[in-house]
Image 1 (cartoon, helix red, strand yellow):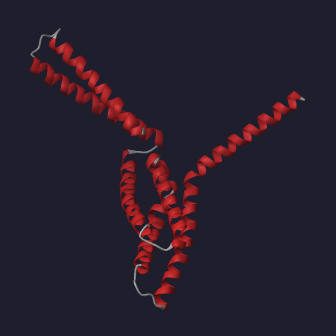
Image 2: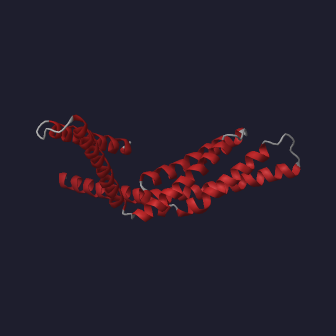
Length: 210
């Protein structure tokens, strides 16, 4: 949503500049239509990319990141996005009714971590375990489970392997939930602080009324 707003602002600034430059070039400066249009398009393009660069710089400053750090995080997010698509395919391939609720919860947690990090790249460093380890593990295990579960005939060995994989997925689900907690811990602490302040203010107000 914010990217759409930024694009709209940048485009509006570029369009406004294009019109102003063309008007000045064509009328007061008495340039030809073609020349005035060329200058106007060039100026509008320059304004668009300047506004885009300024917005990006403000974004980096707001997130306390360098360009190098952002490129690194962006690359990791790109790779994570592909892994999450694989995870979604694997989880929703599994037809086991008993696993549906757990699979939905796993996908919800994973998607939430990704969306928060994409919105606020600085939080990537709070979810390094997720991006470097847990996401890979849950994708591989889910794909393995989906493959085993799709086999038409299941002997004891296959059934045991399915059960073991499901138990490991359950253990990993707890790690994913911890990852999500780590990512939003700042918000939780901030909320608790605000609640404590509100309680103190309320208690003080009640005492004053008495």
